[in-house]
Image (cartoon, rainbow, N blue to C red):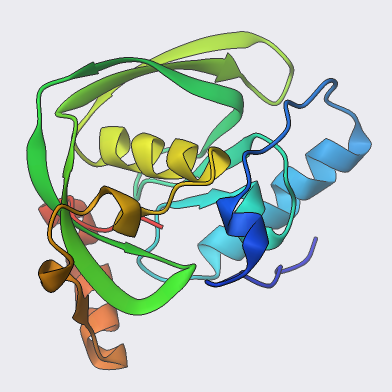
Length: 175
């Protein structure tokens, strides 16, 4: 396994719609293992999408603290419910955080690492993380969803560490 390099804006891969995974072979499993290692090596982050590591495939890893990692292949949102204002940051836009609206809950479908169909109903931080990572698969960044760019603010490295300690309490931190 390896820790992968995170792509940051303006890297064009972050703006491309990703390709469906046609089969889950050794290369996909290796990608997932490397994405998991990369995610867990980055404090305070809860999700990582393949484009963020330079791979234009519909693969995401969600790592909510105190819960088992969720591997989602070919994920798509099939239902959104409600609306709430959240603060969000992203590994691909380092040093910034902004306010935007996310659903109160989502239903997502896709495949797990074994190729079995899964459906996830989520709310709170998991709902936000799923929306954020699936946006990455569609070439959308959280800043594209912000209604007011004035809410985008620079954060200092010590602020990032403090936020990582409260991410699961505040449900505000996504990758």
